[in-house]
Image 1: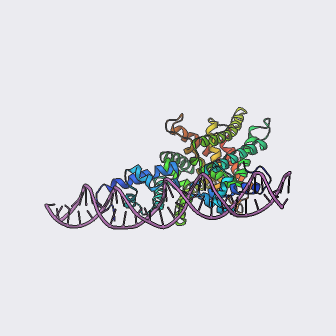
Image 2: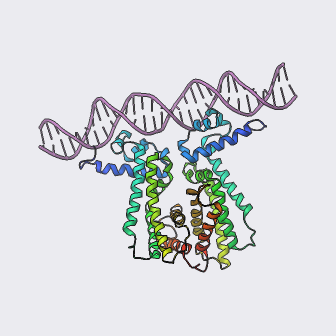
Image 3: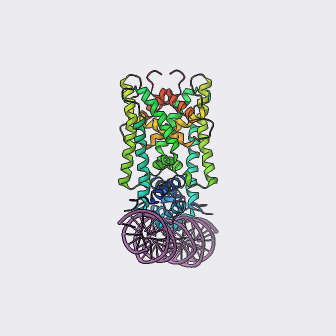
Length: 199
Length: 199
DNA sequence: CCTTGATCTGAACGGATGTTCAGATAAACC
DNA sequence: GGTTTATCTGAACATCCGTTCAGATCAAGG
């Protein structure tokens, strides 16, 4: 087994993943060869196999790591259960925009390359995605129980809101006209009204 | 030039495009070889070059046709300008869901394969996409002028709503629990409230 | 200082890729 | 019915693919 001791592989491993993520996001998994990834790292193609058993696993591990970091980050940032549904929904909205815009490559790859996953790998990633949707669905249901939200189909509303929020990535640029805080406020306004009880 | 007379090429041309669209949607442009498309049509790979100059043009024409049909279909379905912004927004919402769910493959390809387009082809498709967003932006601005919508950033709201509506494609299935009409109603409810003036 | 073991190179493998083209095929026209 | 013309085949092309592996390299540990 490689990487068991403190050699420079502890550096090269992350560099392989970074190069792969960046290239997969820009050109697509199928269009990026192991030789191109190796060239980006400054190494020959064969050396990559010290860090991944094959190309498919490299893709899968990138996606799995991203989804698990997403879930862990939200679980760490979520308000306590005694907070109201409204507060939780605002926190979720702002969290999702902030987290996803900082990891645009990983978000992009985790969505676009699903069909290049082996069936077993696909269902694992799909399961993690469902877990994330379920977090939002629970918030919406809580708000309905409190009488503050009017949402007849919480699961579908959760998917709709996540799609809307993830869409920020297609146009947001760090140095654009609007700051991240302004974008969060704009979207939170739409989210709040979309599910509010009195409208 | 091929296809100038009434031979069976008038049949084969569309069959090539259908096979390519279906395969591109399922496996991705880069993963689908000309030989696989040819096999789906029941022909050898070389024969495809009677219908497209190369693989890139085949992809581009699929995307261009889809975007132009989308714009034409909306322009034909849009309420007259004297109709209110609210009526136009409802029409847009229902149109977008209906049109996109019936052409899931084309929608999928036109979004996922953008990075596999040559730069010139990319900017043409991007322009058509902007045209479509502008249609919705104009509706939102009209509603604001009428005092019925509260939208401070119509362009961003348009992109947000389109992202939400297109997300239907990721989960909607023809024979699922909800009919297309019910889905339209659910999303129209969220769209209406997200931009409504009084909330 | 010598051994150990992780890491990398460079070549090789079988196969797939987009595209071209000479020649076969067959349908449409005069 | 013979000719034209569109269409298709089947082979060939140069190139790239993921992956393997014997041997070189080189830093660390005893």
